[in-house]
Image (cartoon, rainbow, N blue to C red; front, side, top):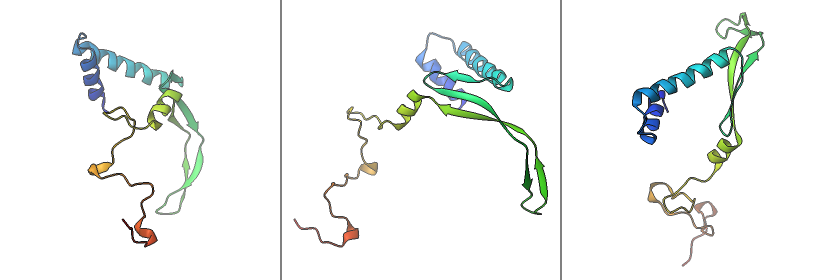
Length: 127
C-alpha cells in the first residue's frame, strides 16, 4: 500500500473529513515518526508493532570483484517487530464470504478428499 492509497482508504472510511485534512494528518504522522527514528527513539504502536533503530557495528568486508578488503562503516538500520494482534491476524485463516473461515480452493478446483488415493502410490482407484 502506498501513501496515496492509505489516504484514499481513510477518505473512504471518514467521508466527513476533507481530503486535504486527511493528507495533512497522514503526512504529519509520517514526519513525526521519521523525526523520532532519526533521533534514535523507539515507536511502539500497540497491537501493530514496534519500530526501532538498531546500530550495525563496523566490519571488514570484501569487494567481490577484486577480493580487496573494504572497511564497512557503522550503520543505523530500521527494524520492525509485529505486535501480537497483527501477528495473529496475519496467521489467521482467510476470511470467506460464508463466514466459515475456510478459503475455497484456487481456480474453482474441488478440494482433495482426505482419503483420496494420490497418483504417487500407483494404486488404481475403485468405485
